[in-house]
Image (cartoon, rainbow, N blue to C red; front, side, top):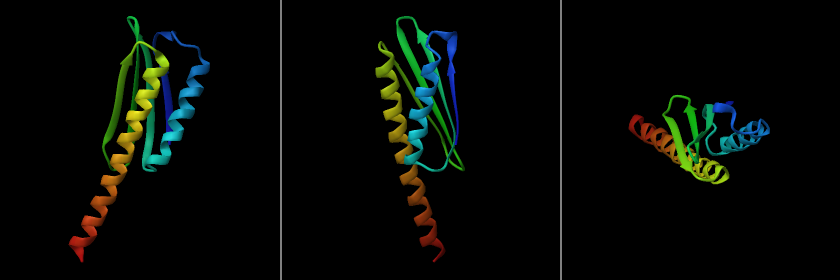
Length: 105
């Protein structure tokens, strides 16, 4: 899985990039079909916006977009939303595979 972290407007310390990358790599355990995952961190007025986008091989593109007053809260909420989306996508992929096996039998 390729990961990329974009920090817009350089409002965050650079060490944060590795911290976010590590958290995103941990999400791979929920769905092993993820090919790329990108995160965009930016400050919007008084709030912080975290957007995580996951590309799944032969599947949907998943997006978790959160804007909150505290950066850590926005990051954790975006990671939680992405984890739920990855789990749901993995379950659906398994159901589709089982359904197609029943049709051909």
